[in-house]
Length: 135
Length: 453
Image (cartoon, rainbow over all chains, first blue to last red; front, side):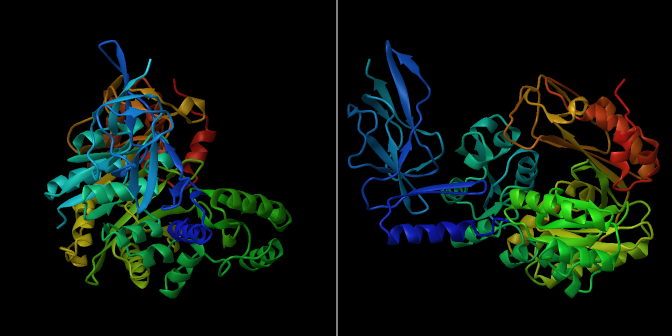
């Protein structure tokens, strides 16, 4: 019986914080947990997956989606229409259980639509923004 | 009553809880994985939240995503169903820390019944008969040998943390104990992360009989009679369950019910739970374990008592008093449940996945279908293979058996392999028809090598 899951996570987080560790990945039986400890630099890179290719006027649109359930917060700058994004750049942060998870953009391109306001809840796989991918 | 409840589960049981919510005027929130996007539970809920991709670990068992879905939805309570987080004290604790009600027993009761050794201890302390054996975990095979000699062979070596039939070995004589001890312990270590073992007397060809209990937060607890679950496959998974146990003397029902209530009471139990017993040929009963959750086979109890268990779970979790007293519980008629699974009986019950191209479910008076499937739904490889529960109810066991035979005859599924053809043969078997059952029935049936014509 995995009765200690939460205790273990709490303990691991304490140890990680005490030792200045920025990233944490835990697997306890069938429970996987990963975290980024703010405000330290070099956070966990949580990759956003791209999906829904919608051709429009010959351009390819791709979606930046949330990789987890939580509340969406802005990265250093809020996503805006017309903004240029590059592959690997942090475009948003999703907060869950008091932890911040960076969302990386999986491609280069230009933001054509922002679908989620900051501080809004997001579900897994929800489209945060649409990007016209650079040819 | 709660305004909104999140169901931390999938499939037929999620549908079952969503229906109870709707009947009580409670808004339901379904969580789902991308693989389950088209499942019925997503279609019938008031709100839905996607919690992951396909596998259980990434979705329904992703603690962070399930807790965040609860928080985002604003649900005041979570129903865990069965499996998944239903028997994890840590999940109940996490919900508590978010100020959300876990629809189930208190954390301390989950923990007390969490492993076989502490559960047995609780049973002994409450004066309930238990299978003779070691008082707790046995440190070594030489100790196990001493215990086995004192209680007599055959004995069972059982993993303390066990479940699902893993980490259990039957030992018929002292000379084979050491070797079996090693394999059972290795299996327990691999399956449960703990190699602690118990030794128990092996009750020969027992019946598996369980008692449904239900308690509220005001100190009231009742039992709702028994379910007979002796028809199990070689992995100790139940195939057919009945209520009541037709041959059960009324006096035994009363004594087992009282014993079950006493055990549950002793650990401060609340909400729905099931105390499992073995019953031998002479009607002696022994405590086996307690499941601290709603069970798959709960509908047969609902059909013979007329009580909606899931609604009552919601009501007692919200602080209501039990609306019925023990003397008001009466059993009427006979119900049988068959578990319909996506397993190929002609291929060693291998899981079958893919698109259900046709789904023709049985109907008529006294036929209940609990399912999340329909024609056009795809069965994914990520989850338990159960597709549906077919429950029949009639005035007597022979009538219920005839109804079950007819319903299985009507039931046609195409596109995937199911165990329906196997169940049809099983319910035609003279021993099943006569009710002459114990846990050796299915192994014997399989050994008879009855093949589909």
